[in-house]
Amino acid sequence: MPSTPESLPDARAIALFLDMLAGEKGAARNTLLAYGRDLRVASSALGGRLASAGEEDLSRLFASWHALAPATLARRQSALRRFFAFLVAEGIRPDDPTGRLETVRGPRPLPRVPGRQEVAALLAEADRRVAVDPSPRHLRDRALVELLYGSGLRASEVLSLGRFDLRPGEPVAVIRGKGGRERMIALTPAALDAVRAWAAHVPRDSRWLFPSRRRHLSRMALHRIVKDLAAAAGLDPARIHTHALRHAFATHMLEGGADLRSLQALLGHADISTTERYTHVATTHLVRTVARHHPLADA
Image (cartoon, helix red, strand yellow):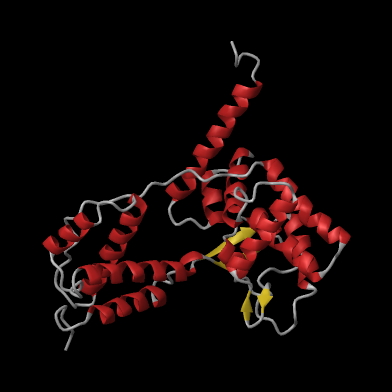
């Protein structure tokens, strides 16, 4: 006999929903943590009656959240919409009380993109360290930053690469990215060389290309590596981080003449509108270039 909202405790309903997101949708760990946190906040505010809440309950709930940042409010609304859609799909409740909620959209600021010279300085610092001391640590760090910029991979995608996902001498590879979706990526010769040099030091029994103890290298460790290289290269560490290198890959590709559809495939964006954000960054760069160098710019 199927459960009803009244008979199913919020904690259990939320747990079932998160299990579905993880198992069927392949949601990332950070998404699961954020949605779980948002739903528990909503449940607490409604006295543990979230699963059985009606339209008026949710309207009052959102009214109480009016002071939240738009991005936070948009994420909470998304969590609630997906949660109630799940309850309806599972036959736990017959209706979706979020239908009349006004959609809240969080701001989508343009990414801060390091310039070509900044990225070149970062990569040069990684090369310099290998030239001075070709230790496994320096070889690993160079391979990491070359992959982040040379392929446009997300930090999580780089870290979860298997030991044999990238084959020596092959400039393309198939990886499993966000949401469990497979896509083909292309690697620059510099990235291939850096990976080849590092791979010779990966333990033979390792499942991962970048192992660390029982799993792969952590996001925090990668974050520290990039920041350390940036500081040593004389760059502002606040501007250079793992996702900034992915932004730089996308923007510099567009500036070089890449088309949006190809870039969408390389970045693994499900929606081309996400890729289109980079056209604004590239356009801004072009306008500044004309303003700085055209002979009639000051006329």
